[in-house]
Image (cartoon, rainbow, N blue to C red; front, side):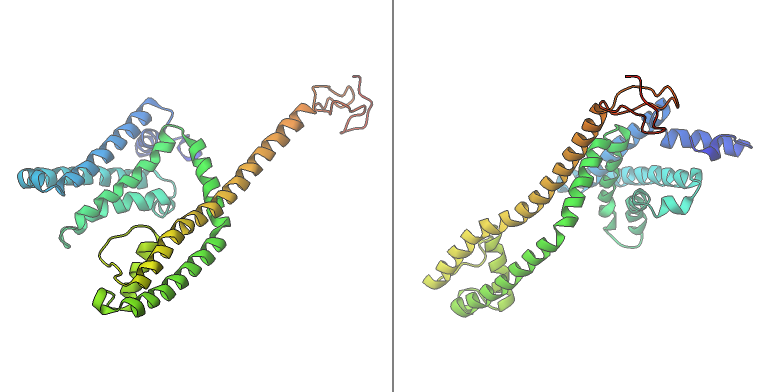
Length: 292
């Protein structure tokens, strides 16, 4: 535990220490029970919000679902207040990533008192399940996610140039489609034609706009084929950067293994320093000859 809880001076400090152990003590039985219970409550609250959007369920259980949502909101509000109460630096928690997520998870229900329907945004509390990594000690997954983040940051310039180029192509071809098809075939404006171009490039194909002329159909065919290549480009860009990060990690691991293999447990009789290379004849610390 942090030093500011090592020597509680009052009953209030003792209470804060006990609450801190429960909320943040991942290695304690009480802490594990609290975290698991919290994760279950988050899941149940999200399922409650989802159930309310189902017309058949909401028709018969609307009042019960609203009561459940308020119960979960009160529980999360108390937990949020306790986290602030036991924190040495409350503002640091409030403006931290998890602190902002915790606040956003309880705000929609209170906003629903003034803005109708805003309580549906309470489903944002599903983000609180990110604590799953801390609870079950899945930090290696967090390390892998950091590699992905580095790869995305390294490729952001290339991706920006790629998207900028795609946008220019979409506007140009959208303009051509408007000129070729015209309002008579549903292409009533250049923005709508650009929308059709992007939908076709991404191989979504809503079908709300269909070219009728032979030239328009040919241009659409070119867009469809091009779309597969466009989808693959950003994947390749990010994939290369991820491969670089993995290569760096492997090289670092191999270097550490090589360093550990080149060292032995020989102790210098003069200065008692150990960790010399296998081929060393003299101590790297004092220069005294080693007795190998």
